[in-house]
Image 1 (tube, rainbow, N blue to C red):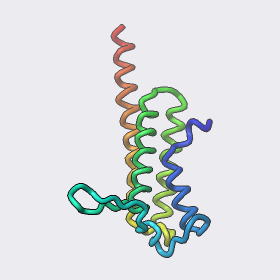
Image 2: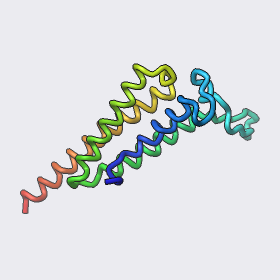
Image 3: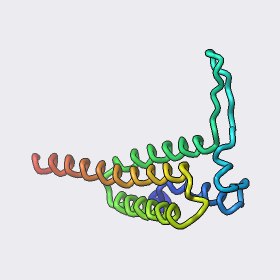
Length: 138
């Protein structure tokens, strides 16, 4: 059952922990603009990675894992897609109703969750159609 929990819930949980003040100080989303890494490039220009961009990167990595999970066509996959839809709905409700979620970082995480839902369903349908076509041909 734990396999069916979408990994896109991890950024949602972390974001909410920061938002309610359990981890860090959110101060209207200012924590997401904090620099966590600065590297001087060969060109002399500094490369700065902010916490918000790291959070988006984590969301993309979790979405990739979810897309790979969607390539498996089995009964638990349907539960996984339903859970992904629930996670997206939670993102959407929080984006609209919760003050500390009205940031561009949260919006991008919400779009990642939406792409997880759409991509998961699309990959599963295409894969099932292909499996069905092979079974009929034999």
